[in-house]
Length: 77
Image 1: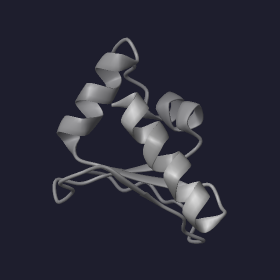
Image 2 (image 1 turned 90 degrees about the vertical axis):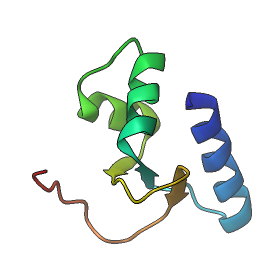
Image 3 (image 1 turned 120 degrees about the horizontal axis):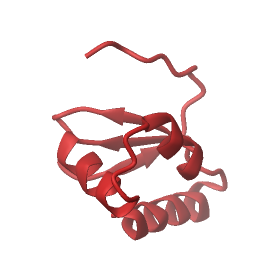
C-alpha cells in the first residue's frame, strides 16, 4: 500500500507540478497501510510520514490523491 501511495503521489506531482496534500482511502486501505507501518495506531503520525492529510470514507474504491487549498478539518465519525 505504501509503495502504491508513493507512486500515486509521484505521478500526480509529475502531471500537475505540485505535491498532493490530500489522500483518499477507505477503512480497508487504512488497515493495510497501518499493517505496513507496524500497526501505527496514530493517524497523525501517518499524516506526518506521508506529508498529506487523509480522508477516510467508505465511498472510495481505489486510493487517490488530490491537491486542495481548503484547510483540513477533522470530523467526528
